[in-house]
Length: 112
Image: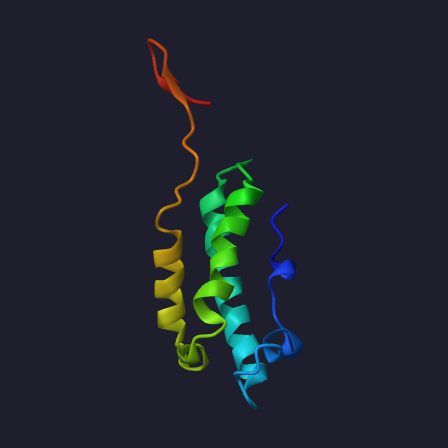
């Protein structure tokens, strides 16, 4: 199951790193902004039309990069919404929705 809640941070989570010195809440908030933006984008990529194609392993694979990319990065505190959106787009660009198989009848093309 895809679960955003297992990735969201708080002051204690980022405080363990001892690098944010007084900015722990800001760091946690910024990480959460990234996680939420990714979650929304991933949902749109991994769930297609009326048919859901959940791939929890892909969700976790994408989400796990955030901590490695940003938890120790001083630029985290100053990320703008546009930079977060660019990061989300870049991080998810390799993932595409599963393709529906199609077949052709003499009268029309049907999607299964």
